[in-house]
Length: 218
Image (tube, rainbow, N blue to C red; front, side, top):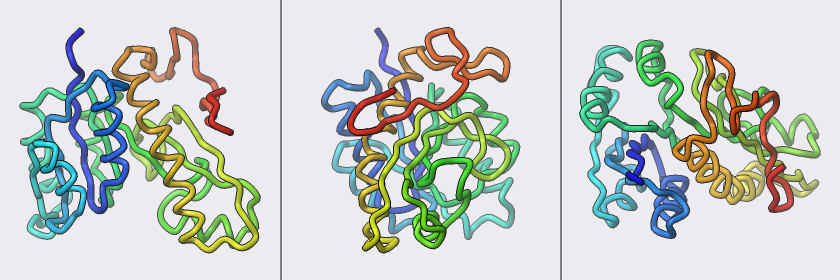
């Protein structure tokens, strides 16, 4: 079976990238990361990639006068690689409609909330401010609206009364590292696919996200 081709976009520490690399190295994922692209030259995730011999590119968004030109610069690198999946792993730029449409149904993201709650930034603080008992993260295919698109897997993380945004974020991140490789595996194994606009799991409509809770998938 041929290895799936992946391209990963990052902006920062690359901890989810590292989780994906570890899943590949442990044979959980039958895949190869063809390139890692960052919009930040100082992104630590570039070091993770380089240490694994993965090709890296920096496309500084500040050098492009429009979002469309920035997106096109990325597409010029991505398209020759013919990726089965383009993975957003802490990529902190809003993508334009052309980019999203071009990679429709093979563009995936992880967001630190139980979508559709708390789209955008500062999700952990919002959960604390609203006195939520349960917080979490979601893996979803990217739609045209911010943090939209069909959700594949969510993970639940209890909010503790002593939590700060930082301590809550750290616990959520641990679970992110588990569910992102799971969702990627389902995609590249052909278990998750689209029939029209309907997301399917094993040829059945996925009417609600899978849930990773207490180290079990339901």
